[in-house]
Image (cartoon, rainbow, N blue to C red; front, side):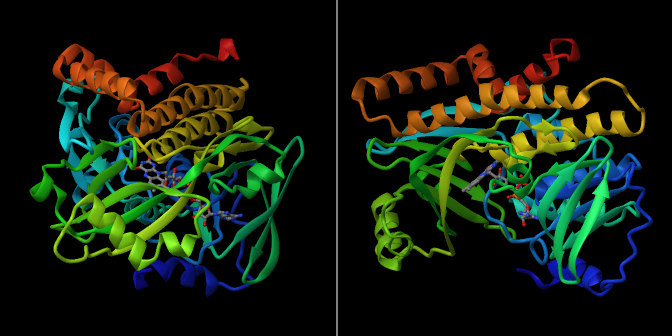
Length: 432
Ligand SMILES: Cc1cc2nc3c(=O)[nH]c(=O)nc-3n(C[C@H](O)[C@H](O)[C@H](O)COP(=O)(O)OP(=O)(O)OC[C@H]3O[C@@H](n4cnc5c(N)ncnc54)[C@H](O)[C@@H]3O)c2cc1C
């Protein structure tokens, strides 16, 4: 945790129990549980529209969260409504137009896709590899400039209730237990969302038998093996994702993602012996790899039964979780945030009488299931396929798509999440 990341927490801690909350008009205020990237984007979009917002986050300050990095073209198209944000992400991250598929047993490149074929479909024909804590930091820096938005770290939402006119949260804070009321509540409090649980919304789906192990190293896989900054490696024994992040600046770091047995003791999976053996098997060196981070994640495919219940909305991981192959979880969450805030602005400021939250639920839940869930499940199956015929078929299909610009565009419209956004926009209120 960097020292400067805690200043916001200190700022609010210093206000103490007498902190004045009346400045917020509860009939217009939007409460947000969770100050991760999704909650902060909601705060920024609503705050910029002039809506009073209060964000609660359980952590003492922003965390150096190493999870998401890949931000897809469709999401960049959404984020560029915030002046300078995409440029800042590009400055702190890596602009990456290309991704590749490799076969690990034969060490051969199967296919390479270039986002340039999407130049007429998006303002951003590339992904930006920007670590999620950097994106969150860029959002927080903008949020802090808005006088109508409070971000309260060290504030944990523990209970939610609502009636016809308002929603109320109970919050555990350094000053003791508090209640806060507002017009709407966004649950952006991650996969274990208290808001979702307190609202009695089911989280349907399944949990994989493997965990994902992420080992981060400065070893240069581009120079030494020819991988590009986003490389997906198929292997019936042990698939891998290998992608580069800017970290603190050139030369950057490489994150390797492997499946790990979920029944194995966590400490063993993360032990020096096992981690170094795994890396040596992946890329043998005469000395041990320099592993600067090691993280182990449980992996789920789950979607909330509804994304809107009365005055409560869910966005981001609180609404859906998926495996990280293809980098779609946070992207979907940021797209939820933009969609939800558009609806809330209409409801609060323009008093639009339509049931826009039902539309939010339908648009985002349908595309989450049809696209993100389906694609991430398929992505994993493609990398781990064991059967020789299936592997051959997969490789031929990928290679044929990559070598034909029409097919490549079709493929990339899905991976870049553009067709998903188009599908969401096509779902109209009349169909709710
Ligand atoms: C290895 C890995 C790689 C990934 N790579 C990608 C990628 O490349 N691209 C991509 O799109 N996605 C990726 N993801 C998914 C991505 O990390 C998540 O989708 C993303 O973090 C969701 O953001 P969020 O803001 O919804 O939730 P979170 O980032 O989990 O934030 C939730 C916030 O809520 C707070 N909170 C929790 N409970 C409470 C409470 N009761 N009260 C108040 N605050 C609370 C937490 O402190 C936290 O700050 C990856 C995930 C993993 C595991």
